[in-house]
Length: 228
Image (tube, rainbow, N blue to C red; front, side):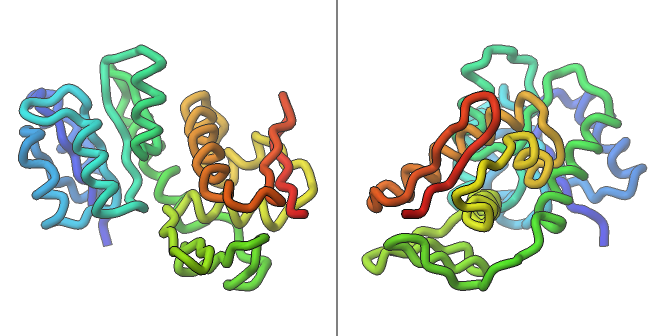
């Protein structure tokens, strides 16, 4: 079955080229040029990956991504933009984006980025621990991607769940930052590295109710997950 790409781009000439190029490589492309209509179309089509321009009429790509994350925490999101400011990169990852490509870009680069993100969803680290584990005061249901305290359940995204599982599997050991990036994102690019920073911050906030748990940054090397 062809990979279904949800592509939002208001530059119609560029959009036509990208759409036709992806379709010639076997992708199924659903394209929208109006940011205001994007979220409704996403809900109807249930794509495998989203490619969102940031500067769009009626609703920008960041807002669309935020709305998509309310509907689906797992679908990969790639931002396309001419913007180069670091704060825009960080904002995109904070919202829940998975990758960031600056215009102009090559079709080969876009296709590789899409394939890497989809591979990360299916070929991540293999489970070497049980599906239901206790981490301090939390219960972590790996298959359901749920972290529970007994009072509330928190639904994790795919990468949040895989990152927590990887940290737990290697608890008390130092995990090299590059190894995490290559395992969960497919490469250790700058943008993926910033993305990892965001995910580590999220996991720390999720685990803050138990002071016996700590994700320690080993500067210049990686992380160590301490479970007292």
